[in-house]
Amino acid sequence: MADVTVYVNPAMVDDTGDGLSAITAKKRINSAMAICRANVPDSGHTMRLGIGEYTASNDYVLIDNANL
Image 1 (cartoon, rainbow, N blue to C red):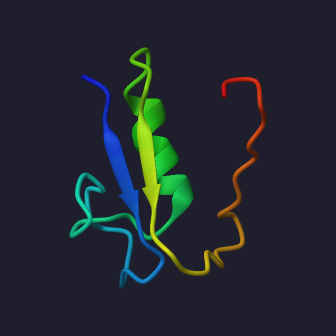
Image 2 (spheres, rainbow, N blue to C red; image 1 turned 60 degrees about the vertical axis):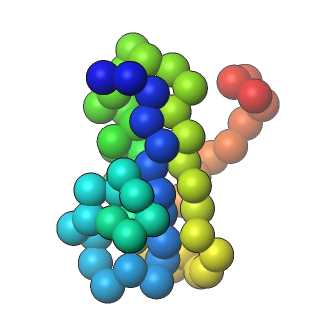
């Protein structure tokens, strides 16, 4: 699969959207990360995060400069 853009919005009711548009955004960051990982070995995936508070206990992301 080609590079993908995955949308995340904490205001979504649940995490059932496919994440491939703002209207069908994922609720959780980890769900969007899973989509990106599933599309390896492609690179250049983009995650667009909506404004809001991400409060799921396992919804954390470590950002380092290794791949920036």
